[in-house]
Image 1: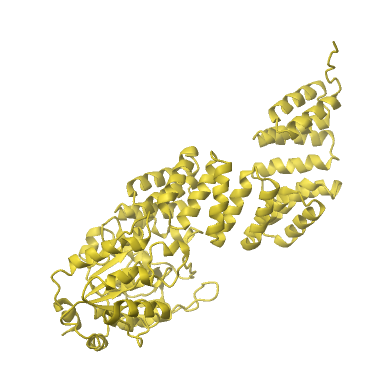
Image 2: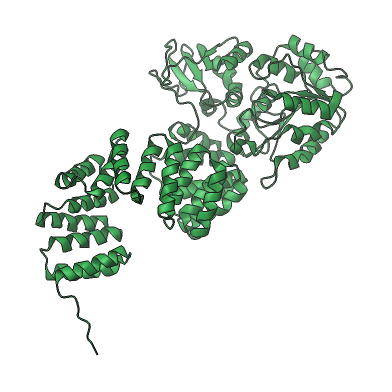
Length: 617
């Protein structure tokens, strides 16, 4: 019987250890290297490889210690410096230190692949994209199968705001390394940034099948579904991801916002508070989402306190303006000129504008800066103030200096709407409209004294997938027009000709479209036509806000809206508005019978008295 000879030389031990490392057996390799170092403590290769295993096992500090010792024993090995840079990167070392170590490695061997790769990563972090791109390109040319280069090139392109190109590199990374979930995650994030929801659905489905226990993959699936407004499905994956990794505040926030959109407000707040404890104190994304959770539960004190966090949340799609002058904090402004500016869309500005009369009463002068059409409308409604187009440069920095203080229109809530009770005592309506114009429109609606005039809209101009989930098509809204004998007036701005033609054909004389009213750019015209209505049914758009600010009874349908609903069944901002939530697991069109039922209930004892009084008739 032959006996097996044990490896006796250090070289044999190291070769065996390297084979184990390449097979992913890091602990076994480490035991061999420890034996080698014990036998030959000054063998630089053994010390270096032992350090590398510590990094591979998740101990970069220990790795750093051994690799530095190896460098002290032999300072002329480029690979030592490359692996030192890798350990430093794992520890979060500053970019300049990484570059210094990589450059040292490359001074010894200009072709040291890992050093070039890490240098490219470091340059990407410094936003020196051009040089980094050249490095990754050369690495891929030299080795078209070098998967790390594709992955890191993709990350460079993402950071350089070239996600459309990054996707292709992540696709290649998946092809080269299909068993690495990180490649699927990076591709999914690029798709999400590009709003390429459909291909991402297929790709993440594959990832979920390949990595059924991977919390990060489930988290990406939840993020995708949330972006598609499919919170009923997203909650399932978000919960699993959070429970698998409860200390990851990113997963906590994703779970929390999905609970929020799913209507589970109390649990959403609990999860958000938990995420806040795990997050860095400076993380404003958590604060902004926590603000929404507080507001959804009717806690205005805490909600308004964190309300301004949206300006520091990079994910918030808002306008961020810069001023040299100070922000108003509630002090006496009776002898001051204050600028009011908006950061969100028209509907939000109109809603918050209900507080303008109270600000006007406190200030020496108020200047309101909005879009051109918004400024024209508010100038008519609040002639005591000056309304104008926003005065700012391409970097959103102020270009007018004729005011002492500034305040965001949405932040007025802290001073004028601190409690739900303050909404109940607020004056309504405070906006006005052109009565003569409204009366002229009403006269064009034959039979208005005998049947209700119902204004309606069904969608936004923006029909992105994530928004369209709670909108209707013209065929979807058509049953409303067939539900009763009434005058149905089009309030849908930017309606397509084919939509109008469909409704005319479907509803006949019951449907009225006043073609001479520009419902998109002429807000005074839109307001006058809305004021001529007895009732309005609208999707969650500015059409509903116009009805709300004029105190026209309305049904508004849409998703959960914490800043609008503030934990109440209906919006405290608009006393005459009913808010309805379409099904989360069915098409919005299937909810139309419920809208009709509620409309019929409210119009059961209809008379034109309220509308005529509004118009001064």
